[in-house]
Image 1: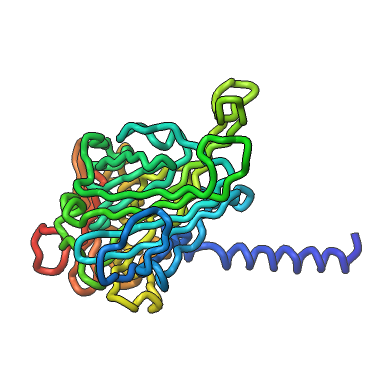
Image 2: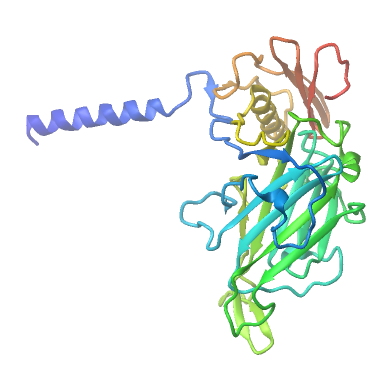
Length: 370
């Protein structure tokens, strides 16, 4: 090896080392939350009720922005969705409105009974957590037959649930429009669209926050589309089976705000929807310091629950934690329980305990979550 080659290799190794260091957190910090980038949406207010027929042709939708196109739930570069999915949101004094438009060459649905497990077929799904605490949230699924499954999660499954399947969204309105022929493999379809109106009165059961919201309020929301690979048969469609196991191939999960894993029930990863006045949907939305701090505390609580020693050693400060927030968390714990919290310079606190619920408490507000 020549002297020139050795020098060149040394320079290359230094450059690579510097590049690695540039992408690493500062000493004494962790990268928790550094890759968290929830989708954001400005939800514009409309003048009156939207007429729901599934066609998305009500004038109220005109001028409202589409969400970004859905991505793979794990956001894997090699698993981009095969078909486009996008959505819009709107609101008035009575309802949260949602519509979605989905490309689909094979329209397929068989469930006709409410509260069937809709995701065993192609579906569109909505998840809503009005107060960002990851608990007491709604899930709604709908198929191309306009069959609905609605339920309420007291807690995410990771926190012990339960899912309340008997909970119905009182006053829910839905409509579906098909651009093609349902369950007919002899042709190729264009797609389907849905319109949903969810009464704020029903969503008020999930939160202590004002419902309907006020302009400027922000909710955690996400959307998912479940898509199966299908075989054609004389009877219509059947799921493609794995040649080795004989079981159905795993479904695709396409979402608005990526979850980084096949796990919709991690609400801290959902998108952020900000309610706006009429005509005020172009102003940029930003992730607030409190949003990032709450996310970090949610993930910190997940780590604590998986640790045998809740007290443990104080973790390094997350590099993504805004400077105004204290670290390490003040923690109390005992057998089977813990309470941990951080605060910012104004005295606002974020608390998390063994239940997994993350709450923001305003200064001088006692223990009442805001």
